[in-house]
Length: 439
Ligand code: DLL
Image 1 (cartoon, protein in one colour):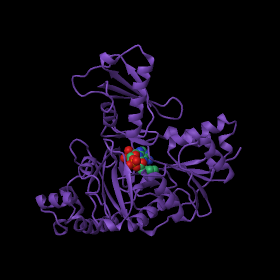
Image 2 (cartoon, rainbow, N blue to C red):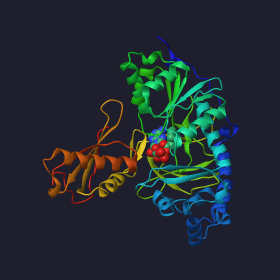
Image 3 (cartoon, rainbow, N blue to C red):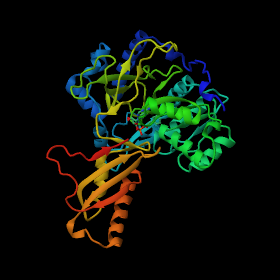
Image 4 (tube, rainbow, N blue to C red):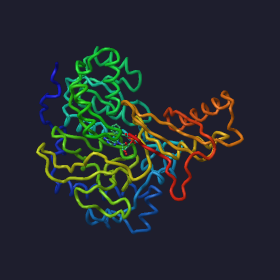
């Protein structure tokens, strides 16, 4: 039996800025915050808010003044769809990614060439912190497309000088062949997909522990310490956590070092606040709160105080790896109703939108999410109109297919749609409970 999980990783730091102390970071953040305010002053959303609250680089005296700045939410991005938050001329945009919104349309995120360089550098930082070296071959099983996972990690790996296998998502058997044939030591994907890889290997009569993988960088969805242990055990590798979100940049906001005691936030490029989601006041250090992120150095679409809705804790105690940056805990939940299903962000309102497009349905539905094995499964129970409820199998089948197709078009997930008789889904007098998450 191989012993990858006992591999000793040497602590390496990619970029000297990672060693800045908290005091140095604070000074740099203040300077960059002022520059940012000047840069976004012509973006209509910020211009109006700045005028209202008399905000300019000169009125920002300390980092505490960030609390005078407006929040930015996903709804704000939507209202300025598609690119109303652009802070540079359109000709300077080098790439556009997108993330699922609360309705069918994605929210777009634009990058200049400098933003793309920054992004790959930020990914290189956490990859190197978690053991990546130029001699490695990395298997990337994230989707390549509007989703930021594939391209973000891809260029980060190239930046380090390692070899990338852009396997993308799907066809797990083929992925296993690639990992074996190309001797990939590093795996990059969602943590749940890693378990699918292990399952599929066993189905094929292969020992997943015998794969050449030595360590892995996982992100894009919530996972637990128990799941880390399970993955490490099943695939015999060391697993590292990294976090990010499209609106802010994609992967690269934070990632673990060799100590794996929290993810180092890249504080020279982001100011991260941890706030009570109800009062929007800062929580005490170490207490859970919603992460609110200001992008200090992005050019194309900088955001001020973006409400991530992700709940986590911050820790500012120095880490023995030599990085001066604060660390965030695992994400423990969300302050909104967004679900992450097989790495895809889904809002219940998107399912509702899909139902509205299909005649014969009612707005009464229930989303049940389970993880029977390693993969998430979604059942959408939909009440249909009494006059349409029929014994004719073909009719009901047709309706079910149409609903499933609409859900797929809007969310990108394949749901198991079940039609239920009128008035069988519970009615609510207060806030409707539309989701049962059994994972
Ligand atoms: O998932 C970016 C990403 C890709 C990060 C690959 C890491 C690796 P979005 O699709 O916009 O972007 O989804 C962002 O996913 O707000 C969190 O709720 C969740 N998320 C991302 N990473 C983690 C993680 C990418 N390590 C949303 N742990 C975020 C828990 C995570 N949740």
